[in-house]
Length: 254
Image (cartoon, rainbow, N blue to C red):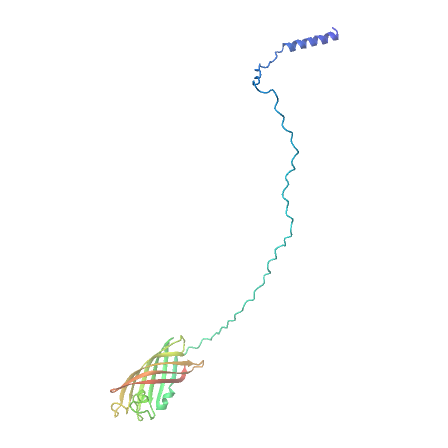
């Protein structure tokens, strides 16, 4: 079989095969609905052509830049001058304890009485005092109502006597020696011959009380000096007298 016959046979077979393949037909669709009765057949008008495009909105103009000076630099720290307060310290050397004072009463020698004081500090602020005395010299001491005569145990010019004062002193400062202001009471005891009251032919005893206040200083070496004043009361026989007292003592502390 020639070539043309073969090509024709192949085309015939292909055509028969295509015709034998079932075709998938589309389902029948309903026809479109008819237009309304009174509807115009005209097409809707075309939209108006766009006008000239509006210029894009412009932003508000920016204010011109202005120069802002930089903030001032922080202040330089400067140390403020400080006022110096000078403190002066006085350091006192501790004083040597001198708890015993032995003194004389030279003022009373004018009226012939020898008198001494022995005072012992029992504790800071507190001391005991003993003052023995004796009339050893004749001297003018006034009459029976004279304060000098009464203070010496109602003594006359020719009298002699022995006596003692026992007392307590309170010292104002807390110290280990008998120095500074003091005050305290005393008990007076004694006997006088040829007194201005009572029976002058024999020795007569007297008793009394006193209260004194004063000041005493003790030097670093121990020298002691002091003075004061007070009030005394003395009684002998049927007589009682109140008299002023004047103190002056000088001596040594140990």
